[in-house]
Image 1 (cartoon, rainbow over the protein chains, first blue to last red):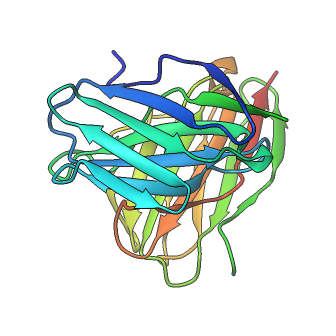
Image 2: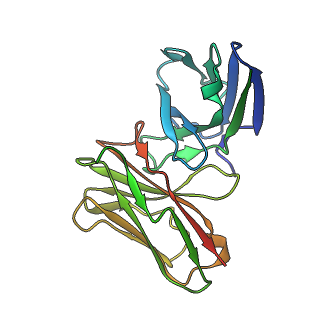
Image 3: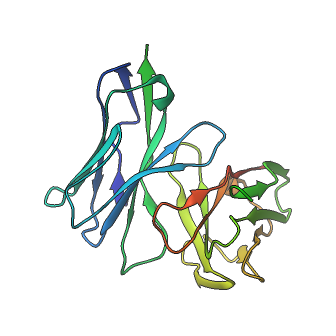
Length: 113
Length: 113
């Protein structure tokens, strides 16, 4: 059973527009969430995170929103740029649980010129 | 070093062969993690070290998998009697303290034939 779900395998967005990547989770013990970005043949790169005590965290063009009641988070990228084309992974962590992150399967974001 | 270094980048092993994958974490990083990423999936947690202590190995899929970090820096993931289902990218990550936003290496792509 997948505890972190990214239901869109791919997403295509025009350059300059907003990209919205979604993530749902089932484990209510998760209390910290992260987004990673991955280019081909490279390891994932940390992008932005949010604690469960917050509902929004912003860093430049990237904003993560957390809706705890819906067990849903989203990553907004605005404006989208060609270099944003990559696979984005949502990950979750439970401070009281195992020490590893639980990842979703990823969403391949394609920014079209 | 500047980043997490993993070697080899690619490894082809015949079924039944033993392999050893190496990870050089960022200097001074206390925490070290190993993940397995199968094709089309997100990374899955294998094991976690804090310095030389292996605090969590709950993700290791079988007793053919063994990890060590004897001096609290370089780590080796060993897979004995490799099987085809072991084919994946093995990612190592390190962080200064805990889970938050740790740095991944580029991974070792293992193909078992």
